[in-house]
Image (cartoon, rainbow, N blue to C red):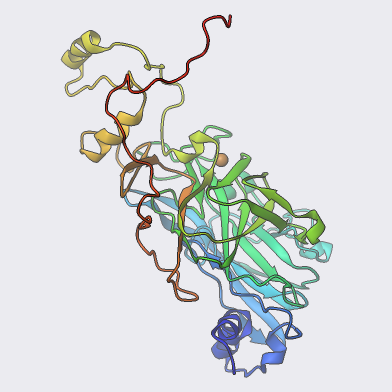
Length: 434
Ligand SMILES: [Cu+2]
């Protein structure tokens, strides 16, 4: 009796490839040589992305990447000419099993040379993809082939190592996931993967600016910003893994609400259980990957970078601080010069979100509001690296569809008890404290 899980594994870890080539594979050839006690890996779910099917040629798993310009949407209302692979940024996720022989064809359809570095993967030096150092650059129109045997497992990445600053700033990157040959002791029910990035897509423009070093406009998970990032979906009690890679210019403290997750691995593969750490925020450094795992508990739980500017969309960073400034008089004067000018920010920036919702804010073309997204209780006032983990009791195995908003059990939500600012008798800092 073949389970649905086994079928899913087969489809990504070999079956799909054999279907494409017409080569028939026995299950033993594509699945880890696992005892019944060891769970086979589930296919990885790349948020907003996809996994590149391979073709099997005499036991070698062949993947074909095409480096090219892509017309990419960060969220409805904001697109750009980006660079990626096979029509997307990030490029498709590559998935294979430890011990596999892989052949990676790379066709360059850009106007300049490129190469692909298999980030974190143990391989012969000449396959490492560093343009000029280990290989000639792949000129426009050319196709290069890389071939090696995977001798490890873990969450890895790929990206160019030629004009790297420009090519990565335009979105050329992807995930390379290698499953352990012997399966995993701890059964994983949902295996998510995403790569973090930053973009200098200045307001009103349509091409990322590669010269920017720190002051970015868009902070993305798999090249999407909230609210366009898909939710992470799970059934209560399922074991969930989220693999996070970072090819941006900043460190990102990735925070998950509602659970203490375990950090179980990363670039170095799955760590021994004695090294697992219980955390609620894990810093994913530049060029690093981290795997976090947890048992899903019901609810809608925020999952985001904890740098508050990284959960915003395009905004000026050198604007004067207007909090606490009464602009009512100066507003009139400015309106005479700039019709429609609206003084804002005296009480904070929350009203920006309300203005956006009311259609009062019209920013430059192709530019997302700084904060956006609407939940069942009002505006979320988020953007950038933010999405929601949605855990429900009644989901079918492998159902990744957005289940809508969480229906909280009666009596388990925060609620208003007063509208009087002088409500109650709060204990204040004693006046005797200097
Ligand atoms: Cu961040």
